[in-house]
Image (cartoon, rainbow, N blue to C red; front, side, top):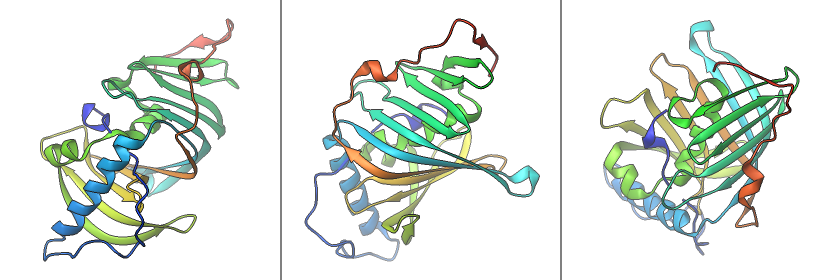
Length: 231
């Protein structure tokens, strides 16, 4: 995943019902414009996030076999740099932290850890990158992606959303991305489609927005007996 997936969102609460979006033209552009505006407002207002997270990775090479991981996530946007992210997975037990452009993936059961630049993140470290649409502004979305409005959809947990499909305008390490945005402008679910058709889907639930989270929460303490391994 590259720098396109590292920029800005969170909405001022809008006093409208879900179905009250603006009129849709033949290409769905009015709806896309409305969604982008809400995402941009949401981006500006979000100062922190704590939530439950579920990541489902689908391997197309193995006939669509899926691997599901669950945990807790904290998120702290940085307006002039990459956001801070920490995910404490419970199935299996792992901790992923993204802090100041570096990531650490610690597996206590194996007494192993992986660390490196977020630009070269592989495997489960990509879970943090899938969250990056929360940190993208509408200007960056317009500049870097062609968007198609797929329609309304209800994600797991009963949250009603608008479903967008985003295709990079220039060649990237992934083929496309899909984003499910709630009425407040929050992308509660994302799916990144790799060039080999593998997918990583991340769902956020139990959202707690604008709560107090300090930078120290993103630092992972690695025991001295843990071994560093290659990604």
